[in-house]
Length: 144
Image (cartoon, rainbow, N blue to C red; front, side, top):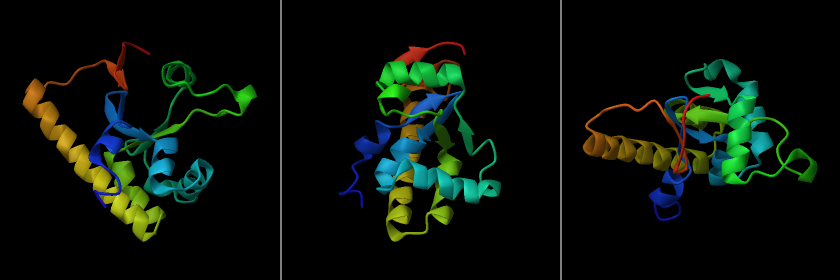
């Protein structure tokens, strides 16, 4: 599976929002090769498995910043109408119980390995210090 989804492809989609490393619903849907709406519906059918420390929805300010930084199109042009959901490492792990395909399980394993690798790299570089800024794919955004 690591040949099908290089770690860099997953790593480039991980954001730090509200101090948490997360993957957005649309990025997860791309990795799982499902529609974003289908992924969100599956999560909502099993919402009790996704407490706020596993998944949260971006607020309007975060969504506006994300649209600006990542080039998400405006609503009138076929873009998203609602802020995306952000899944923490634990939320991604829980997705494998909701999306029960073999592909989902393999992708989850690759994502978990990527999170672990990033944690090790951050520890090595920063000595375990935690920073309070939000990191959006290389762009710093302080405050909310």
